[in-house]
Every structure is written in C-alpha cells, then in structure tokens.
Image (spheres, rainbow, N blue to C red):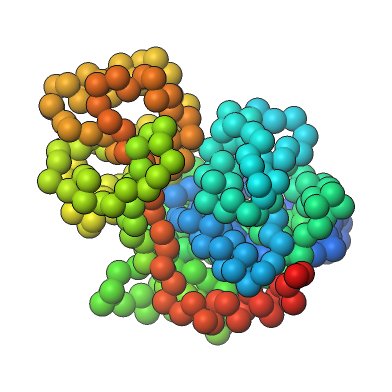
Length: 343
C-alpha cells in the first residue's frame, strides 16, 4: 500500500465530516440579505478563479447591479474585516489585503471589495453601509460558513483534479463535492479540443450539471508603475524574461507564447510570493546575463513589486482575460439569481 494513502483517507474523512456538519445544521451557516454567487474550485491554486470572478463581476456591473466582492485576503496582514475598495478608490495594500483582492479591486473599479476571515460579517457590514444587491464570494466553494444562492466551480482542463487528495495531490475535497455545484466553468480550453471525458467525470457526480467553456488569452500589457494599457506589439520581437509567483506558472508561460511573446528565460516563485532584496538581485542578474530587453510578470505579482528596484530593464504586466463560449447563457443565469438591479 502506498504510504500516502492512509493520510489521504484521513484528509478525505475530515473534509466529508465538515461538509456533513454544515449540511446537517450542526455547524452554523450565515445568510446575507442580498444573494451570494460563489466562485471557487476543487483544487489548490491556479485554476483561474480570479479572472473568472472579474469576468462575472463585470457582467453583473454591466447589468446595473451594486456588486460586493468578498475575498479571504490570503496572506494579508489585516485583522478583522478590511475594506479594500469602496467602488471609487482603493483603501488597502497588497500586504494588508493580499494580492488577489487588489487585482480584483483594480479590475472592478466600481465594485465594493472587502476581505475577511468571516466573510458573512464583511458582507453584512457592506450591506448596511453601502447598499449591495449581489455578493460575489471569491474562492468560496469550501467557505461553507456562508449560504450561497449560486455555486460556480472552475475546473482547469489542463490539470482538472490536481493529482488527487493531499499529501499526494492538490485536491481540496473528494470529487463527490461536485454535487454542490450549480454550474461548472471549464477554464483554459482551446478551440477544436474535446473535453467529453472530463465532462463525463463531472456529471458522474452531478448528472446534467450545466457547464461553460472559457478560453484564456493575453489582451494587453502595461508598464510597472504606469496606468495606461499598451498593445501586445510592444513586446513582440523582443527577448523577455518571464517571472511569477502564482499557482500555475506553466500556464502563464503558455499564454505568453500563444500571444507571440518570445520568452528566453523564466523564474518561478511559490504562489503569493513576497519579493525581497535577493529576488530583485536574482532578476537583475538573469536579465543582464541573457541581455533580455524586458521582463514580464502577472497582475498578481505586480501588486508586490517596487518600481525603484528595476533600474535598467522595463517590467511589463500581462493582462489576461477569460472569454466565455456562451455569454448569453451566463448572463441569464446571473440575472435569475441576482434579480432586478438597483437603479
């Protein structure tokens, strides 16, 4: 028997017991006044939850809703609920609120964004102070402390189930948790590819569950420290060094390459990495050694970088967007859950 199997079995049993305790009412599930749409996943990191949250948030804002995004603020130093954005300006740093919350706030400038360990408390506070007619629960599939009216899960087709449960793999819950999902978003799909086998696996646990396919593409770049977006052409033909501290760096490289950007070297760090003096020295050394023209990184990493540390090379931030295969279906689903917008 594999020595890791007993550990995985214990992990699975603990997760199942927790889920059962919430379903049976032994553990309390809070409710907010406005409907809650949860966007989450089954695996640890790197599936595309943040771009999906941004895309759904933009749709809801476009439908006229007053949107609040509730995030856990992973690795943030905050103590208690923290307002990241009031829909007009940003009030927190990536150190305080975590990098993902800042990325969401910058990409949804008209949305309220807050981080909290107990997101029901943050949601209730936002409802009372600002008025909210729909909440987006970022990375919320396992946050059973808060009732949700719609559960969307994001499954990365390049590594759907993360190699199994810990300690062997990155799966947060047994696959049977798919039964809680109202719809499945297949991220990082490619035109002409079939995902029938993956869909069949998902529907084995949740028969007939609707799904959407999403393609990821690079839409623009901007210089670190600047506000304006630039066309991708500014990087095409240049030799660049790519670096990132994210859950799926290989996919980041592929996105750059599909956009025609020539990556001659890559430097990867752990997810949510905080950059220090040694990191800047390493990036400067690699850049000089290879005589690269520019460096390129992700929006999440950019929130933790200092412009002053890059003296001789320009750093560009890659802006990625998700394109859904059926926007009208998703728009109708969101409208059914969110109801009439507050005008």
